[in-house]
Image (cartoon, rainbow, N blue to C red; front, top):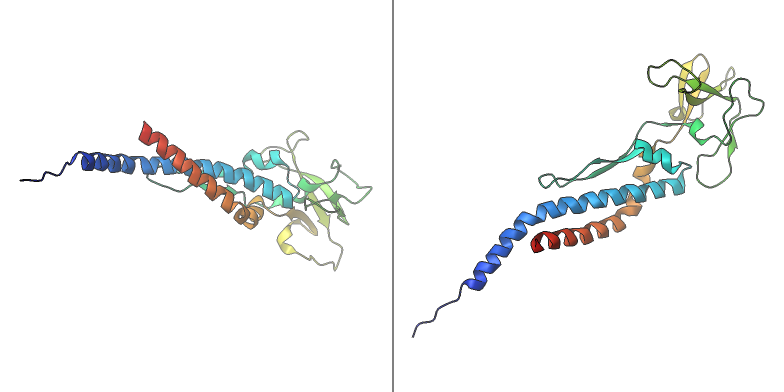
Length: 205
């Protein structure tokens, strides 16, 4: 008597493995890209819980999905702009130019009181290489130091001539790096769930 081993089941399993192998990397790339979108969204929320940024400001290219994953490059990257933010961005009330009747007030933290900038004043700054006009100028907040006055935090000031310094707050990238870890668990769970979803769809197709 002879015994024959049925290979049909093995062949089907081998086919499944081959299909699975071809589907894994595209499914992983799609899942990572969904995770990056979620990471950017949650990152924006966490940043705004800490710093007085407005959502449209962050959505305008300051916090972005810098790199999308591909099947042959399974890495997606979310980055925040590292350029320091003008302190004028955090102004309380509408900036006025010329002689200041009252010291400008700013609120950098999302919660808490605003603070006045003694000796501060607003000025119009060139936007790129264009001529400074009211409708296209950036707004800066500067301070003029008195003779013998010292700068407490040089990292937040840039000299623009004589004893005048432009004032800056934290960059979006700086704040994002400090809050990104808070989003890790939720983003990881989303990536795992979306990976299973995309893989199942590809195998069913």
